[in-house]
Every structure is written in structure tokens, then in C-alpha cells.
Image (cartoon, rainbow, N blue to C red):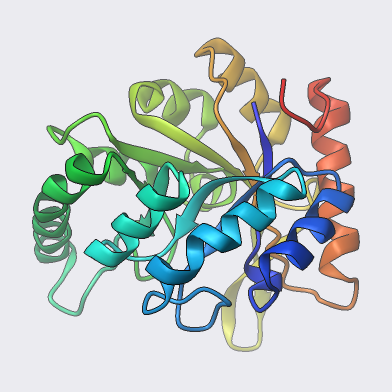
Length: 258
């Protein structure tokens, strides 16, 4: 198991500085955004990702995935850098759910040749809102694709969808590639019900139930804390350090490679 963190809050940092920061927070792994708003972009990935990931590894941080898109330059950059997975979500368009599923499925099928050519996995994460929101919806989307097409299970979005980890983790066990830990709840505002992301103990997701479900299916892959919080009056670093310690204490696991 590698305790990891999604480095989006520090997306502008170079690899060496980022590695020192998240190692200091207690992590041993990282998911790296490769986007136009990040230090490594899709346009520069082939040239810059190998150096960036080497700098992370020099600081004791193993890159578990990139959050990016399914273009050939990103696949090639991951292969050259030893990054095992590209994580995506499945957007829903104005033409409706069924048409969006067909469109996403077609994109995934087109990427099979790239995934095989570069020996890089594709991870699909459910996300509330304008994406396929449920674990079961993602599993349906992936049905019949090669094994290297994985589920990125997410505690907060699973709970926002009204599901239970003991059900969705068991059903998704054969596809499980990464487990995201975060928490969220719905709060009523003057503009209606909004989603609020908070600490480990402040939301609909029960991390202890997540742990029990993962033990049941013998999961030993990466755990990624996504460092997503709606209230930024407390620093992200303080919040995610606290959440890591909560997970480590309640799960009885040391925050390092085991």
C-alpha cells in the first residue's frame, strides 16, 4: 500500500519542491495533474514528465498516476516516466446520460490500442454533478474492456451518490485500481443544496467502513487522499496532514510503503 495525495493544490510547483512538501506531510506517493493549469501540461508532458517524476522519486515520492486526458503524448509520457495510470472522469453532455455513456465508451475503446502500446492503465473515477456519478455507472462503462481499464473508487462521491462502500467496493473489486479518500456532504444555502468537502470526520462517507470493505476484498493498492476542501480558512497542508493521521490511526497502518 502507498499512502498518496493528489497534488492539485500545489500544481504549480516543480517536482523537487513538491516532493519535499508532500514527503514532509507524511505521504509516500502522489497523483500528479498534467493539465494546462499545472507545472507539467499536456503539451509539455513528453519532455517534462520524466524529469518531474524523477525529482519526486529523489524525494521518496512514488507517482501513482496522472490526472490528465487520453491523448497519445500523455500515454507516451507516462510510459517514459514509469507512471502506471492516467486517471479521468466521464463527462455527461447536454444530449443526456445514455448518449454520454456511448460517447465515453467510444473514447475508451479508441484508447485501448494506446493503453496496450504503452502499457499504461486508464482509471475512471465517478464524480457527482456533470459526470457519471456512481461507482456502478463507471463499472457499467468499463464492462468488457481490457483489465488495464480500472475503477478509481472515491469515498466522497460514492457517499454523495447514496451508495455504501461494502456494496460498491465488493462489486468493483476486480477493477479496483486506486481508492480515493475524501469526505463531503450536502448543505442547504440560499441558492439551494450545495456540496461541501470537509475533513475525514465531516461528511457522509465513513472511512472506517471503507477500510473494512477494502480488507474484505484484500485490496493492497494505492490509497490517495485528494486534498479537496471547500473551507480554505485552514491551510490545505494542515487539513490533509490531519486526515492522513486520522486514516493511519483508525486503520492501524503506517503512512509509508508496506
